[in-house]
Length: 223
Length: 223
Image (cartoon, rainbow over all chains, first blue to last red; front, side):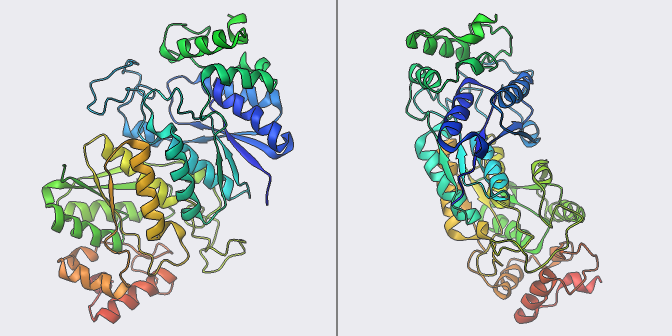
């Protein structure tokens, strides 16, 4: 059984914590990372992911996905759409919802892993603060794992170390894993600002987590 | 409940039969089609899909997927790799296996459908002649449907009208649905030849189906 692991690294706080989790569990030599260039409006995320991977010493491959931009209609890939908490969509999901985004990321990651004899996929999705994103739920991840195993005849395992953690607990985990220095390189702000805007939902959630954990966010020290 | 349906149209015999099936079931005004430009070595497939859609009078949208080419390593997207029935891969799968290809196609189709209030997806996958492709099996499709419903909070339904049909039965179905004229516009040959090479596994399977059904393949009349 291979002990190789592939971390889906977005350049954010959660996936960076997962990268440290994977290194702790599988050993740094067994870990690599994949980042998706899917037309996100904040290109800084790609730089952050690369910087974090370099910092911890694992390979980082960037895979392009041009399809989401072609689909259109969400605030994370279309520059003309404002990020909002609520939306006019009948579904009630926030307009940062890219339908099936995590399903696509993990399926491509599984395809990449398949070709390299990697069976462990690690992703930072969490349902605790899931903000209306159904593709972050444990039930979805379990169903996806079954689908990938069926569809690729593989023994792929999706690991979701943050699934049931609050943001506070995620910060505490990052601290315990020695991940805090890398947090200075991560990106969270929905508005793409650096230093972070501090007022968008993503910034507020991040600040709340660090505050509740009683830990200073290294990103804010740099601001 | 919406009666709108989206057919994944590859430009081949099976998906064209599914297009007619969908029109028969949902009505031509409720049907649209999506074709994926994923870097397939035979660009003729895209032209065939467009011609078939035009011929039957349904919209056809082409969505790009540049990710498979970036993954590399399979005979359907890499010009340097010969198509083979057997391969040195440990999995024993043919080297035309693009890991997770149908999972990706249907997930993107579901995302496209989600944004357009379409709940019926129709795909020509079949496990009868599945040739070692695990992403064509009924179990995989059922699992994927559950994953898409969970991950998008949708009522998506994946229809696989050819799942348990032999190639003979698929030809008979096409005949019954009046789909034969459109078959002259379809593409099957793995070697991308037009007229078809007649000797690759895909050509042989197609010829066998028409022969067993006692139907002349309109594509061969044009050759």
